[in-house]
Image (cartoon, rainbow, N blue to C red; front, top):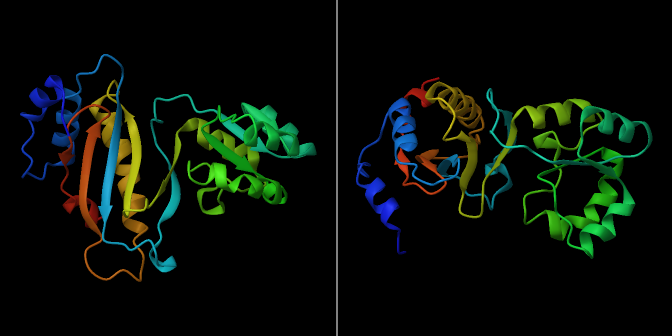
Length: 232
């Protein structure tokens, strides 16, 4: 893969063989971010899990202490009182069956997170082929299938992110923006790593976290030592 000049120059500052302390890794990621926009700082955890087995799946959510730095648009599937609650809590879009054709036929996807009350999952299920591949399908483990729509919306707006294994058994999550302070990024990283360590499947034999890498959107990856996290 051909890389740009800025990336190549930035990559020279990273020792690919070294496992950096998290604080040093964060500082390096900030220093090697050269894009003209405020890049997202991403965490990539390659696990030893086999997601094909249900007892080795990892999925959940965590609220970042300092948020993601991104304005999150929330769509809520609810009716009656719960729809009113969702609107009052700050949901960007609220609806029911009438949204199905808009999403299916018009390709409307101007939202980042979908929340649904349990009674609406029959309706939302019809959108599985569209929402599923995009990681937008509501899920009880992630707290997005719930009767407490107010809490769900407030948590998401405050910086709640979902984590899950992808097809290659890697977890990818944002932990903030390059413009964040090193302390803010550190606290967000620590919050994510704590829940990921606890999420280790009991059925997993062997190494859990094979590699942990931090990178900005356009910058080189920096390998992070897991020692302090695995001893938490």
